[in-house]
Each structure stands twice: as C-alpha cells, then as structure tokens.
Image 1 (cartoon, rainbow over the protein chains, first blue to last red):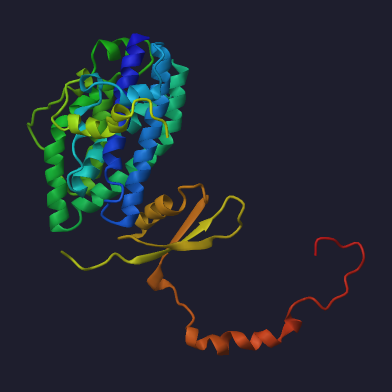
Image 2: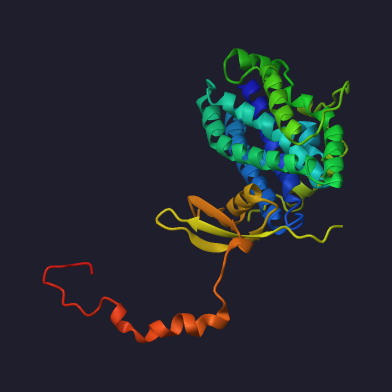
Length: 249
Length: 95
C-alpha cells in the first residue's frame, strides 16, 4: 500500500505540475489555436491527476482527499520529476518538454494497462487515449520546429540540450518501484528507457535535430528535491487554499 | 519577425447524429495535419463531432455576391419546382 501510494504520488504529481505549467499559458499561447490546444492538454493532465490522487488518498486512508494532496503539501512532499516543473520558456522549450514527457507517459500507461492493480489499470486505460493525442500533438510540433526555419531549429535544438539532462529521472526506480514491479503492479521502468530512446530518436531524425553526447543526467524530484522553479510554481498553485483555507468554488 | 500568416482553413464537422459534415468555422494552420489537430482542439472539445474535414479556404470557389440576383432570384418565382402539388394517397405518413 505504502509503495503504491508513493508511486501514485510520483505520477500524479507529474500530471498536476505539468498541467499547472501549461495552464500558465492560458491566454498567452502564440496563436489562438495553440492556446486552446495547450489548455486542453493542461485540463487533461489535471483530470488525470484528480483520478490518480483520488485513488492515492483512498489507499492512504488518512481522511485526505484529492484536493488536499494537490494543494496542501509542502514542496519536498511533491515527487514529480524535475523535467515537468521547468519553466515554459519559449514555444520550443514548452513543446520539447512536452514531447519528452509524452513519449514516456504513453509507454508507461501502455504497460500499466496490464497492472495487477485493477484501479491503476483503469486509470491508465482512460488516460492513454488523451496521452496518445498529446504525443501526436507534441511530435508534430517538434518535427515542424526542427525542420522549420533557421530560428525555430536553433530554438528547438537549444531546448533539447537544455532539457535532456532531466529525462533520465523519468525512469528512476527505488525500493518503491522495484517492489511494485516485482508484484506486477508496474513495469520495470528501466526497460522503458530503450523504447523511449527509440521513439524519441525516430521523431528527432525527422525533425533533423540531434541529442547531446556524453552529457550527464540530473534530477532528484522523485525524492522530493526540486529545482529553484518549484517553489514559485507551488506558491501560485496553492495561493487560494493557503489564503482562504477550505474555500470551495 | 515574419509577417507571413499561416493559411486559413475551413472546418467541417460531422456530429454523432448527423449524416453530413457541416461548416463550423475556420482557423489558421501551417499545413493540413496541423489544421486537423487545431480543428480537433478548437471545434470538438465539447463532443461536437466524430469526423472532421479541413480544406484550405483558398481552394474553395465561392459564388460572387454581385451575382446573387442572376443566380438565385429566378428560382423564387418557380414554386412548381417544389413537390407540393400532388395529392397524397390515403395511408401515407411522414411526408
């Protein structure tokens, strides 16, 4: 139970924090159509977070609900990967971040369809349809940015160099994931990495973009240690609940 | 900064009950694939449809409003083209 709760926190926080990041673009998208697209994805992710947190709260059994998990924890209690809390930056930064995440997310949900935990399998099934669309959207954009103008290519390539170091954390496993993988609740995340790499490369090749070589990886978000951006994000996310505790709307 | 705008696309959606695609609006997109995705995001987010067509607006040949009289008014005086002058046999419903 404790392991399942922790794993759900990890993937639920990925959804919530990336959803919050994309929500910041509401009304600020580069064009109307893309503004709506990114906001739709944000809402999908927050919806996924709601389902995941609801189950996590139930397993925890301490009387907390999904809202309490989303709004009332401290920074070190969020276990999202550092990739998803990175700022939106320019449009290429936003879409490359999304693309790295979507490939991982699609692979994860596909594997979770056969989880021995029926509730997790159900959440994965519902989320996978959304995630497949997110990946289609982000892949098409990465291809167009990379194989677009000189400026779009430069920005996309720079975004890759900047965000690459955070990608390995998506496949992080500690005792929690090891135990859950043994019990068939989740796949072995290390096995997802080569598949992820293959799919990332197939899109980057079309986009005429390249991956950095010999660059180290970084990130301890899965253990609650975040980048300097996280506190600001949470301040905005939690503001209403902190100022008006228990407010409903 | 480039001043080139993306081309305009017209969007047609077929609703769940509908048999035909209906024009619902337009949007801008760099190419057909992105136009399709944008149409999905802009025009079907409230379950409006199950099928999308997009066509570049420039490819549509439209009638000229100046031709309206010549095109459409002659038919106004030809009510006999409506099949309303027949006596229906008894027992036929739903006409």
